[in-house]
Image (tube, rainbow, N blue to C red; front, top):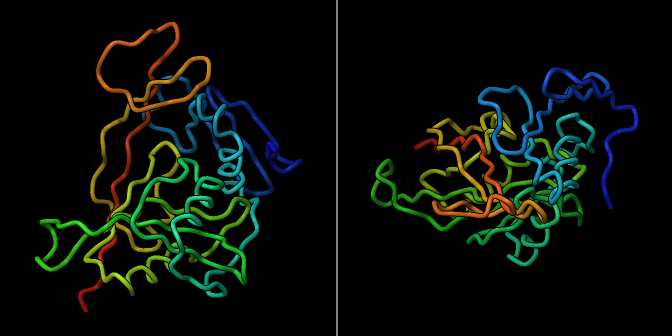
Length: 238
């Protein structure tokens, strides 16, 4: 079932992008096929994902417009969950779906699973002391149509209580987010990655990472993103 935006959402064309307004909230969107704008204050959505991930992108826009049910993390319970549970949740609700991770944690409002965070195994990093390990926050998302205030912070603390990481790092797609929610809960900007290239099937719009080599321009095209923000959450030594 294709999700819809609020019925009273106003749409206005502005230059190469559109502006959606719901109540006092605005969401600016630029649609592109091959390459996003280097600077844009809003969402930059590739055409191929509009075809293959339409429901999830509409949910992203709903969140930007604050058209979601709000839950507070303090009323939820955080605990470890099985990979099969995390896999179904992330396939249903995360834009990039599930990917294999070592540890999964869920946030429950009564019996309802409303948010999931997945983490990698620990890795040795020069920036940490010998006995410490860095873990990657590989996936995080809330259930579609729901915003959990303080949800990410609560899941990070639950994970940290069990694994005592030296730090936690994550990547944020620059064309979809400026990482504000991560920065608010304590992540700091570490660096930025280069643009990534994807090879897209012109008929099915399925994409894969592009590796240098020839391709048939009649059936495929290359699209790029803006790269990622690399963010690191460091724990107080005290």
